[in-house]
Image 1 (cartoon, helix red, strand yellow):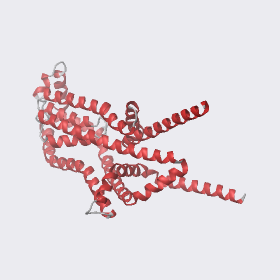
Image 2 (cartoon, rainbow, N blue to C red):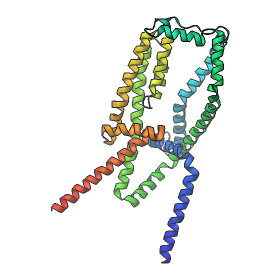
Image 3 (tube, rainbow, N blue to C red):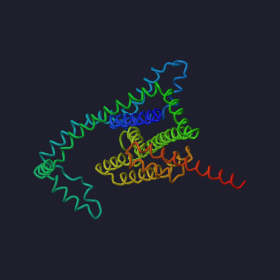
Image 4 (spheres, rainbow, N blue to C red):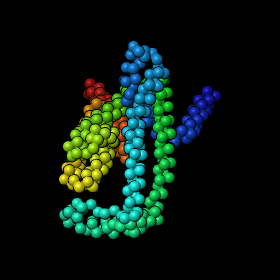
Length: 355
C-alpha cells in the first residue's frame, strides 16, 4: 500500500513540476520550436561538417560556425533592407519638405487611366495637390494617430531581435547535445509507445525536413524566375529584388508583396503595361507554386496526400502563425501514419479471425 501511495505521490509531484515548468517557459515555446525546426532541417549539414577532416570531432566549433552561418543567412535580407532605407532617408526628407511647400502634383499618366482616371486626378488634387491640402492631410493623419504605431513597431522589432538571439542560442545548444537528446527521445518513445513510437518520431523529423526543403526550393525557384521578370520589365537591381522575393516566397503568398510594390513603382514611373505584366506574371507563379508545387514537394517526401498537405500548410499557418508552416504538415503526416497503422492492424486482425 505504501508503494502505491509513493507511486501516486511521485506522479502527482512530477505532474505539478511539469505544469509549473510549462507555465514558466510558455512565453518561449515558439522560440524553442523554431530552434528545433532549424536543427532538424540542418542536421544533415551539421553531421557532414562534423565528419569533415578539417573539423572532425570538433562539436563546439562546428555548432558555433553553423549557428552563425544560419543567423547571417536569415539576417542578410533585413540588413540590406535597413541599409537601403537609411540611404533613402535623405531623399525622402527632401521630398517631404518639397511637398509641404508646394504639394505633390499628380503624375501625367494618372488621367489617362480609363473610367477612373479623371476622378483619381481630382481626388489627388484635393488631398495632395498644393501645400495647404498636403499639410491638411498630414494633420488629419496625425490627429487620427496614424503615426503612433512607430513606437509599437520599434518595440516589436527589438523584441523580435532578442527572440532571434534566443533561437540561435538554443540552436547552438541543440547542435552540441543533439545526439544525446535524440537517443533519449527515441528511448522514451520506445518505452511509452513501443517500436511504433520510434517510427512516429522519425516520421515527424522527416516531415519537418521535407517541409523546410520544399520551402527553400520554392523560394529559390521563385526568386530566380521573378528575377528574370524584374530584368525584363526594366527594374533596377533585378538580382537583389529576386533574392528578396525568394526570401519572402518561403511564406505562402508573401512574395506578392514584393512584386506588387515593384508593379506600383512601375506605375508611378509611367509604365502601366509593364506593371500589369509583372503583376500577372508574379501572381501566376505564386498560384502555381503555392497551390501545386509546394504541396507536391512536401507531401511526396512523407507520403502525405496532396489535399492534406495543402490543408496542413494553410491550416497550420492560420492556427500557429509562421511556425504552423512546419507544424501543420508534421501533425498531419503523423496522423496519417497512425491511420495507416490502424487500418493495417484491423486488416491483420480480420485475417486472423478468418483463419
